[in-house]
Amino acid sequence: MTAFFFYNNLTNPAILTKISHQFECADGYAMVQEYAPISQYVYVNEVCAKNEIQLHGKMVTFELTLDAVLARINAIPECKGADQYKSYTVQPIAVHLSSGEPRCAYIIY
Image (tube, rainbow, N blue to C red):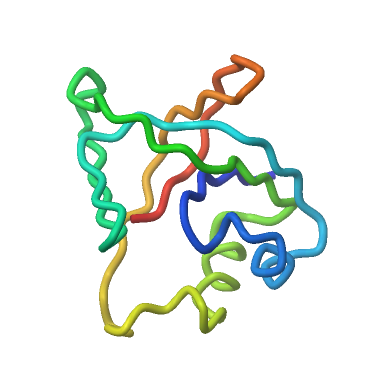
């Protein structure tokens, strides 16, 4: 099982089913250092104390490997920006579910 924290297009169930029809989804938030809603720019500092902004989204868990999920996301046209050669960062992040339970997931930015 692989968990992701999604905060933009990938919170849409119609797009999530393009990755897999089998997934679990829960509301939550992650702490980030910077977030620009219009450009969807996100920066997560490795020093947790510097991440002071709550970014709300969904924690989605798939019955797939990390590589399989990333390959499927890369094949979804709605997930590609104007610059198809842009590189992204994938890193672990603490997610706080609406139930108050902390979890670990991957964030893509």
